[in-house]
Length: 172
Length: 430
Figure (cartoon, rainbow over the protein chains, first blue to last red):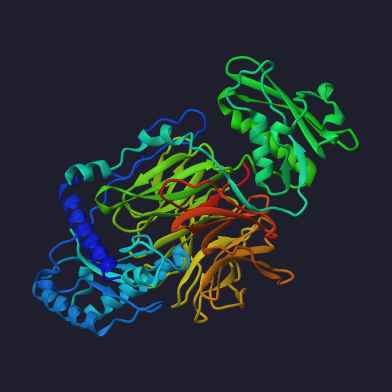
């Protein structure tokens, strides 16, 4: 059980490292737009291209302050430990204003689009808390992924608890 | 790491050919009690020569409908390919009710003609006797055409073997990332093609009513946005780029509008977008979640999911009067409505004892039934003939597609793929 949590934690940190690395090395030369592929012979389906995104990690977690906040099933209420960490983030963002992304996530139960809406509620709860602490709301963008980017794989309570979360990230 | 990232940056068409010929086994878990016995001997050029046996594709199509039990090739006493070659006693002895015979011939540059017939064995009656032409490179398409004609002649319902599926696959990529692909295949899962690949989530694919385009949600810009893409040349266009949610696209029956969900006003609301004028019209106004719109066949109303009553339930809004009516009352979780083509049967995701299943509701009789008994069932999509519902489920921890007939009598799993398969969307008739 703790092994699973440990593995998941490692996975998440590895993921954010990689995301940060990607953002640092990617150029914007693949603009989203019409693809220059020909039709696939035989059945009229061709393949398009997507641009790489500009998602970044950042050093918001400096000093060991949590940047991931967990939620109860079907709830968008901040837990006390999340509030404590967000108080630190609020102070830092007021002293050193910069753009942040607030990413909302859900567990896999329920429909995908409904879960995106639920996860947006969670991310909005974080944003509203930071606004109450005096952070300029124009510095924050809420992005909801719903169940599309799980932190932990698996269909059990342990994975679900890790997936119902909001992540605070620096935008670049 | 840089290399992993660069690899991750998309290079589309490389895999297409490799994925084209996946091995397919459809596992039928439940059929009707008394399936019609049908025999389909080989359908080939005289003397052989086609690299695909059309007869076996036709037999597999019919078997997958759950309504037919094909006679095994090994049990057949003869392989007739036209009406004149049929010895009825060879088929009576096997209990055969229907027999399909056919023969292919080359009719010029890369084209094939197939003459085929359907006979009822007991009365020795010819039900169908016709021919079909097509490209020699499209033998599966020719076979599906024959299957459609046979199915319709016997059941009275238009066949959907020539239609297509769109779906999303997700596979782990190096470095702990995930790769998302938008795929299109035949209705039997064969001839899978990749339409798009991304390192960021892709979801909610939906067909245009002419079957030539898909709309979907992509996170490739770092936030959700709705795109539309043509199947023929892969050309794509970003349709929305608002702050917040841009989701749940649904094409109107006339192809002119998209219903979609935006949260730019603070919470998720349903809008329609006129694809000709580019004009957005707000449809819902409520502080609750409103999402997952689907059009009624007459294009005048939308059904959608809302938690305005405290739990997610399905509502209908008249686009003219803006009158809203709650449709579902059973249980405390009903979401993602999809209407059958007759506009009368509604399928949805229904939570029952903590389990998510696909359920149907007859809007006239209010007959409600749970269609699927697998777990974590979601994303139902109705075949254009209204006979089958395809949905996504989990099996041994893996996302797979499953199908159930609208009367719950027939159930089967589609062939498994690498990675998770999710969010099927059944095309219209093509």
